[in-house]
Length: 235
Image (cartoon, rainbow, N blue to C red):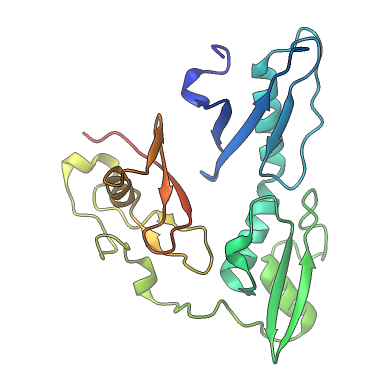
C-alpha cells in the first residue's frame, strides 16, 4: 500500500483520474495465494488488461498497468462522449464507461445500434480528423437529430448552483477566480454544467457525500446520478 500511495486508496479500491479528469475505481482482490498468484482486478472499462505478474510483482505494478490501460482507452471514451453529446441516445442514464454500444434514434421512429470497437474506435472510416458523430451523418447521408430537450445556447453554460456562467473575481478562489463552468454531469439526459467550486461546496453540505482525499463523491442535484469532483485548495 505504501508503494501505491495512501492518497489513492479507497476501501480496497483504487481511485484514479485519467488525463481527461475522468475518475476511475480499480478494485483489487487479494486471496490467500497472494503474492504467489496474481490478485483479481475489476474496473468499469470495456475490457480488462492482461495482468503481467511474477512472484516479485507488487500491487504498485497492478496500478501502473491499469494506468497504461486507461491511456489506451482515451480515444474510445472521447468517441462515445462525442456520440452522447451530439446524438439522441436511448437509455443514456443506464450507460456506463464499460458500455461499448449505443442505441441511436435517427428520427421517423427508426433507430440504429452502434457497436464501437474499444481498442480501435476510429479505425473506420478514413476521415479520422472528423468527429465520430459527423462521420456517421456523412455515412448515412442525412443530418442526425441531437439529444432531446438540449438547447444550444449560453444558458447551458450557466452553473446549476449559482446560476452564473462565471465565478466572481476573488483572491480566495485562487486559480478558479473569474473562471467559467468546468464540470458537466455525465448523465447525457441531464448534462447540467457547474463550477467545480460550487458543486464541491454543495456536496459538502449533503450528509451522504463521502470524501476520499481530494475527491468528493455524491449525486447530481438535478438528476441524482453519481458525480465525483476534485476539490482544490483555495488561497
